[in-house]
Image (cartoon, rainbow, N blue to C red; front, side, top):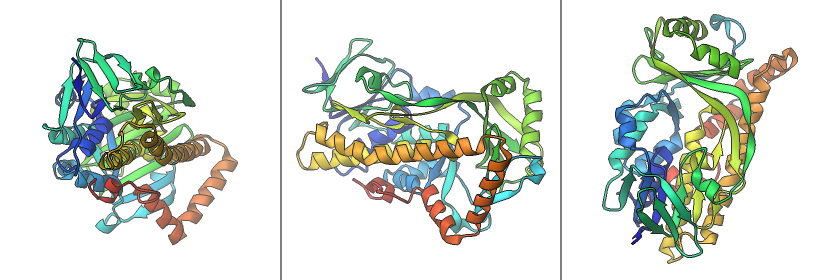
Length: 411
């Protein structure tokens, strides 16, 4: 017989676990019964983590973690971004002109985001994912699925059966749930890869994040707790593969040359990882008894570090839509509930993706006329306090129609 839950989430990574906690966690005012299904054990991901990625947690995302009772466990591993600089990355690292600057390293009130390694985030989320309302079903993937017209149903590869009012697809960019529901994608790939690696350095970073725009793509140096930093190095695909093929010693030499001398001598932690870059979004963020969140709904360029934060907005908005319906005695997987979710999230996501795509195309070239024009525009922006403040509020995730959780309110 099928086991019955209110909601089943497919995917036990960051977005899926946040959605589970928002709907069935200890801080939920009206907790639902939630199952989280994944073929891969997330605990093993933490114990054997070779994931070099780190995420920028905006001020609104931090409020969400606080509202869910998670921030206390995450905060020891968080590094405030006290200052953000944007430069023209042409030329040597010691002569990159600063075009735009936010915050001040010596003023903690200017913090709009912090950096946390993804493995630490996952560890914090797993600590809060507990019975009685949340059950992790790990070790077997989904073999069959049915999205209605009555209850949604799932059968795992080991034969276990489940039914629910709503399935949430948090199973990543190649979402099997999205494909099974025949939801089409719109978008394209870039001739770029993002190289990610962390390193220790002699000099303190002071909480400063750096974004250097080079002809091949942005090069970001992001501060981590301690004298450590993470990089996201966007390169043309062919050049990225060349860097990946280098010996550890040779790669460290090239990275040191790219970083420059202001952090002192660096030592690479682990091996660099590379991810092909693309931009796409689903034509709709829902199907019958199915909602898409995170990378299952959208993938954007990583230059602003907003990918996870968009997924958290998805989870917060969907949890609020579902919670409101549950309070009113409505079908939580009904079409009107899912249409409200899509209407809430799709425009924000598409607008963000389009703006990042435009910035990437504008800066990832060596056209001298464009470089002069864009540098002048950024310098002008840097001198207008009101415009800089608007950019800072956007970067902190404090604009638009924010779900309650992102305002720090429980649902």
